[in-house]
Amino acid sequence: KAGDDVVVGVVETHGRTDTAALTAPFEIVPRRRIGHGGHVLEEMDLDAVLARRPMIALVDELAHSNAPGSRHPKRWQDIEELRDAGIDVVTTVNIQHIESLNDVVASFTHVRVKETVPDHVLEDAEIEVVDLPADELIARLKAGKVYKPGEAERALGNFFGKTNLQALRELALRRAAQVVDRQML
Image (cartoon, rainbow, N blue to C red; front, side, top):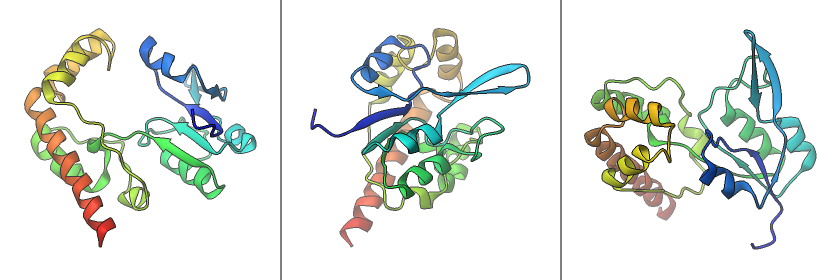
């Protein structure tokens, strides 16, 4: 709305029409297709985004592991290359994917998250916490607004139980407060 040149590098809709509708106003850079193990995987086309040179690129899932054959093994590395080229990036990351918090998250979820982002990637980032109380997030999960119905039930019974969601929420808020404290200093 401000007139900035924004493109979608990659947004993972996971089949959710509400999420797909949010991308409609923006130019979407076609994904690169990579053959791997008899499947065709789609990844952000880093070269196409760099060639397009938008002011801002929307690149979902910072902690994502790229398909074999990609220039970088991790999406956060793609984002670093975009930023080095002068392109601002808006991305998403869940608190459980921050590398330094991996042990803390594992201590209460009993799950070691494999896809993590090194803390240095977030050092100079502007962070906006998107927060919901656990009951509201559970309602969104049950309504299919986060995962497909079968995946949502499995997630609710495991990693995203109410107690874990409350602890993850507290961890996110504490981390955001630490960032604000550092910025003030």
